[in-house]
Image (cartoon, each protein chain N blue to C red):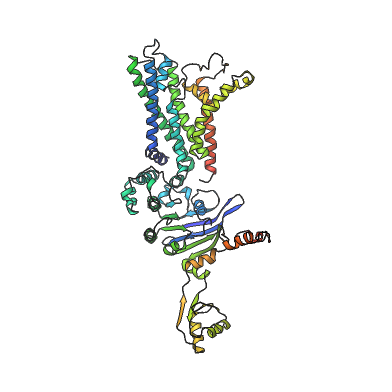
Length: 263
Length: 329
C-alpha cells in the first residue's frame, strides 16, 4: 500500500496542472474574499458569522466556491489522465492490485484537497485580518461547524470528481457532469418547484446531492426569496451525508466496473 | 520462463484469442508473429492480467497478480506512447520506480542505456516515435527484470534504431533473460528472433525455431541453368519434380534435391551452367502460413471493380459466395 501511495504522490507532484489548479483556486478564492472584505469593512456586523464565513470560504454561502471545483478537477485528472494518455497500462504493470491503486489515488486526492482548502482558508483569513482590525471568533456556532463542513465538502467534491472520471473513463464526461449537474440540473429542479402545479418537486429538493452538499458550509438557513416554498432542509451533517452517499454510489459503481472491465 | 496455458478471449461472438498455449524460454529472443488483428496485443494483455479472459500465464511459476514489485520481475510495454505529454521523461520513470521500490539512480541508468540521457528533463510531448519507443524500453528495463514483454517495439524505429534494438534484445537474452517481442513485420522478426510463436486469427499457426518454421512452410527450390532447358525440364517432370521455366530460360525446380538433379544431369549428359539451391525466406514462410488467416482480406482491386462497373446488370450476387474473408478453418 505504501508503494502505491508513493507512486500516486510522485504522480500528482510531477503534473503541472496540480500546481496551477491549486494556485488558481487559492488566488480566485482570495479575490472573492478581498472583494467581500473591502465591501463590508465599515459594516456594523463586519465580524458577523455570515460575513466572516463568506470571506474564509470565498463566497461559500451564495455560490459553489472555487476551491472545491478546482480540487474536483484534480480528482478527475487523477484517473482520467490515465485513460486519456494510456498510462493505465504502465500503472497497472507497476501496481496490478486494482483496488490498492484506487485507494491510493483516493487518499492522495483527498489529502491534496485538505491541503488546498486549508491553505485557502489561511490566505483568506490573512486578507480578512487586514480589514477586521481584530481576530473574529471561529469557535462559535455556526462557524465552528461551517468551516469543518467546508473542508469535508471540498474533499467530497474531489472524491466525486475522481469517481465520475473512474465511471466514464473520460475527462470531458466527468467535467461536464461535475459542472452541469449542480449549476443547471439542480437549479432547474429547484426553480420548477416554485411553480404551484409542480410543487410535488418541493420535497425532492432537499435530497438533490449538490444542493444538500452546499448545506455543509452554510452559515445560515438557505434563503431562496420570500416567494419560495419551504424546502424543509435537513441538518448540516445529514445533508452532507446525502452528498457523501451520492459520491459513494458513483464511486462504488465505478470501482466495480474498474475491477470487471479490461484495462 | 513464461508458460501460457489455454489463453482465450472473446468479444461478444468474436473469438479474439483461441486457446493459445506456449512457452517462452529464457536465453533467446522469442518473436510473436502474426498479421494485423491476429490477436497479438490481446494475448499479451491477457498474459499480464490487463484483459479478463480464460487461461493462465505463469512467470517462473508465479501468476502476475501474485508477484510483489512486478516491475522487478517483468518489464512490459504494450503501447508506444503511454506517458503524460507534459510529465518529463525522467519524472515518468521516477513515478513508476516509486511504485516498486526501485532506487532513483536506476532511472538515470536506464535513460542512459536507451540513449535518452540528453532529453530526460524534456517533456515527451515532442518525442518522435523512435524516442517514445526508447522511453518504453527504458520503462521496461527499470526494474532490471528477468522477463521482457514488448508489443511492436520496433514500430516507428529507423533502420539504425531497429539494429540497435536487435542488439539490445539479443544481449538481454544472452544474459539469460526471457524476451518476448511481437511484430507484424517479418523483416524485424527475421533480424531479432531465434524462436517464433506464430498466430493468425487468434489461433496458433506455428511454434518453434525460426529455421523449422521456414522449413515447414516453404518448399525448397533449386535454380537450374542449362542450354537444353526444355528436354531437361521434361526429364525432371517425369521424375516427379515441379518445374517452372523462368523468362530468362532458367528452371526453378521444386520437389527435388540438388544432388538428385545433378545426378540426373550426369546420367543424361546434360550440361549445367548453374545448379543453386534457393534459400527460402521467412517472408515466404509467413505468407504461406498466414495467407489464409488474415483478419481483413483486401480483395483484388480489378476483381472487385469489374463486375459492378463494366456490367452492372450481370450476376450482381456473383461474390456473395465467398464473402467470408479468407475462409480459414
